[in-house]
Length: 389
Ligand SMILES: Cc1cc2nc3c(=O)[nH]c(=O)nc-3n(C[C@H](O)[C@H](O)[C@H](O)COP(=O)(O)OP(=O)(O)OC[C@H]3O[C@@H](n4cnc5c(N)ncnc54)[C@H](O)[C@@H]3O)c2cc1C
Image (cartoon, rainbow, N blue to C red; front, side, top):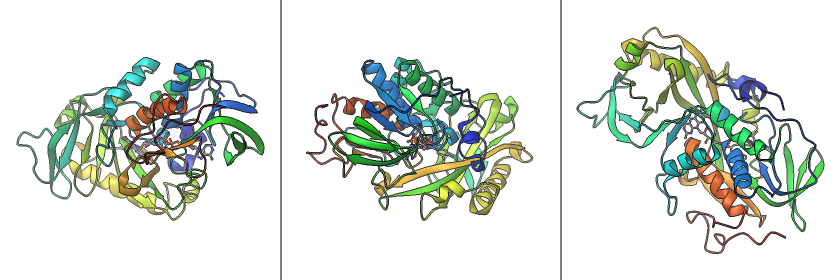
């Protein structure tokens, strides 16, 4: 695997370019015949699980099977805002996501420009008297509350997790789509027509391969958009109320989120393209159709938000998939048809910190050191996985 530019340029160029790159240095490998742990999906979730598995058990064979390139989908197209809890709020037994996320990054020595200054909830009602943000977007928009949160550089987090996983001995296999999964004495994955046996499997395939993960009809894939401005001056950033580096998201509609990125670019995001089938993602193009319309609307909104943005140049436009499950609760459970297969994902656009936090948890569950979480697993399903054969 060569050093690659942003995963999306080699993944799905039609999704547009975010303002970061993914740096990887790993050699191509042959497909293994057998591994202790197979991880399907090379986004934040799969890479965190792989890195954590090798961190805890350096002697176990771990392979990540990525259909495209590392970070090519949601993770490489994310906004990089780190938020506490889940899109559905706190869940029974979830724990402190941001503290856990920070500690995992620290322990794995992943440098991704993480900051945790807090986050602004913004809205059109109940605005704080001294709101640092005074924008105009379907009414006066200001800060309603400050909550825990922060930001990372998604390119650096992907590169860091991938390098950590591969440096610790996990196999990172790109262009290795898992075509099917069946059960013999152990789980068997079919990759490019070849069988790979695995003691345990984690499916971290997010909005795609919903038949494989057993989520077809149970979770909704969507496509959402973001733009980045050209670098602004410190004065412009201050007048926007963003000098503290706190990311922001609306708590009412129309939805808007954003953050300052390196060199004083501001990233803004909004809009959902609805899909009948996840395969539509593969043909989706941000320069045409509904995604293009929504990006134009977003750019117009950005320029009307504040005088500092009136004639701002937009340097990057992109989009990516998210997966929304019932009640917006993340899915973290045993596969309905396979005993030793865990399915993890569907963070509903709230997955930057959660993917790493739960990815590491999935690694511990695969090692039999931790139970699956309470919120989705019936009593018998939350028991530790069977002993490794
Ligand atoms: C525009 C945008 C902005 C966002 N902003 C934020 C934000 O600011 N804060 C936040 O918390 N969340 C945000 N999110 C959501 C967050 O990025 C995701 O929740 C997170 O990246 C999901 O990571 P993942 O590893 O589960 O999925 P992905 O990164 O999508 O990885 C899944 C991987 O599985 C691979 N795959 C699929 N099928 C197969 C197969 N059969 N075989 C092998 N590989 C397969 C795919 O190629 C893909 O690389 C945003 C998302 C988007 C699109």
